[in-house]
Amino acid sequence: MGIAKSYASLYLNMKSLMLLGLLTLFTVTSSMAYSIQDENSILDRTPASEPEIQDSQGNQLSNILVDQQVLIVADVTNALMTQQPFTYFVQIEDDTGVVVSLGWLSGSLSPNQMLSPALSWTPQYPGTYRASVFVWEGIDNPSPLSPSISMDIEVRLTEA
Image (tube, rainbow, N blue to C red; front, top):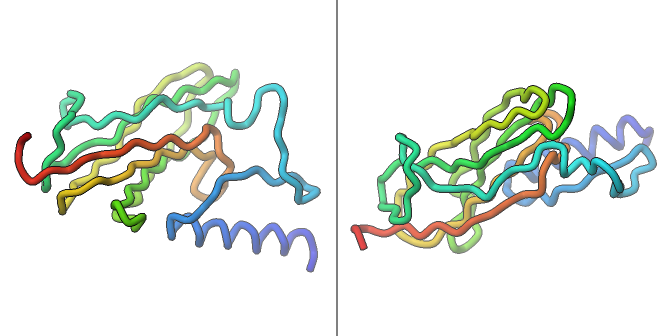
């Protein structure tokens, strides 16, 4: 199998796994080996802050209720001196590891620009959930720009 077919097969498998919520992020070089760069690591190009749960007015929330729309927000900063395309993914899993929500938005950051992308989620059931934030170059280019970051979310039926 030629190198182009190998890359195409790898990409399709990664895309399928991403949609199933099973993807482990990695970088592949032309020699098909893993690459860790010493300076300006790819994972430092667009660092993301710890995610927060907010309401539609930007207020941080600590008590989340069933059927309450919330926003998963993280600051994303372009650490490069060039334009950086990005895709911000938020994946929500229930306490059994089942993906209950997967959303993304794409954009481009100017040099040194900071943006606070937000994706909404409305929990349908009480319980403990895990929200994971991924920042990649794009939906069609699954190169990570930042390490993934996760947080646990407790959803209640009524106010505590």
